[in-house]
Each structure stands twice: as structure tokens, then as C-alpha cells.
Length: 221
Image (cartoon, rainbow, N blue to C red; front, side, top):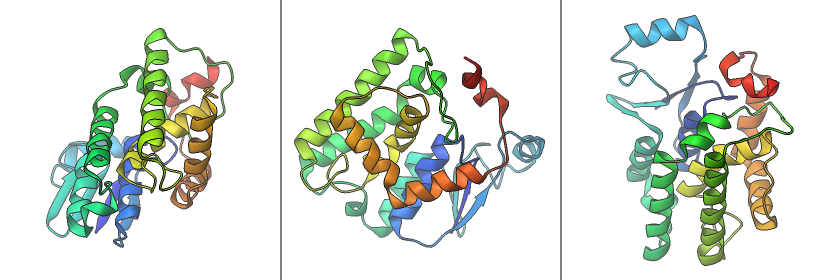
């Protein structure tokens, strides 16, 4: 199995697929490409069979190719058992699916105004009212998941699963831009930041030499 991902410092969707692959327990080969480089633009134009969507992440499993982070997670869940990613309880699983889908399809202002940049620490970054609303909604989701289904551990639904995989880049964004959060959210963010796989990703991101200027604009804000 091979997972093609983008720059660990910037690629939020790659982080999700990588965490999902780690959670699956399946051994996989990791290929990291610089999505900001000229070689990547050439590769996108010339490698339709290798990268059908022209984007990362992409999972290859023999002759099977899967793109899109959520599709990758679901493919891996089918292979190893869905309980590894989703709560067993029907109500908890229903909410987990809903919040993962919402994270996958929404929060446009948060994504555009707070691009993932693991290495950066930015003070006094101003956000729009739409971005503030996105932040509030994230905190609502975290609060409800923790209050209703978090008794089994420190993650959103107790144990580490799909919801944590999909909100991991948001945790990184909140750390980068110094977003103020209430105590319960701070505790959750600390848990996520110190999680073994997250630490491995963070350390690798800090060691990367690639820089993508468009994602560094916030440093000058």
C-alpha cells in the first residue's frame, strides 16, 4: 500500500489521510511531494493514471486507487473493521459521521483565512466575522461530542477515531494562529497535539525545507 501526500507543513487533507492510514494499522509506503514546486505542476499534467484527481492525498493498494481523504478513511475502515474508526454506539456513530461530513464539506472561511502552517506561530491575526462563526461552530461540535460521548477517553468520542482525524488540521490551525478557546477545547487540543502520530507529523513538518509563499502570507498580516 502506498500513500502519496503533500507537504506536511501545509497539506491539511494529507494529514487526515495519513492519520487514517496510521489508525488502520496497515503498513504503507509514504511518498511526500512538494505541491508548491514546478515538478508537481508537471506531474499533475502528465500522470492522470497515478493521480486521477490531480490532487493529494492518493492511496494506492495494488490495483486499487482511492483519492479524497474521507474516501481513503472509509476504504481503510472497510479493510480493517469500521469499529477502528467509528463509535460502536449507534447515536455516537451517527453524530461522528455527521461532524466528519460537516468538516469535510464546510468551514470555507476558516480554511481560507487560517491556512495550515504547522511551523508558524502568528500573533494578532485578524479574521472575518464568517471565520469567527466557523470557529464557534467547531467549538460547539467539540463541546457536544465531549459532553455526550467523550466519557471513554480524552478524544472527541472517547477514543481516537475518524472525528479526531478530520479535526486534527483545525487543532493545528488554532495553535498556529493563537485562537483563544475555552478550557475543555484547550484540553482536547493538547491531547491531540501530543498524540504520538501527530507529534511525528509535526516533527517532520518542522524539518521540511519547502516553503509555499501563498501559505506564508499570514505571517505578514
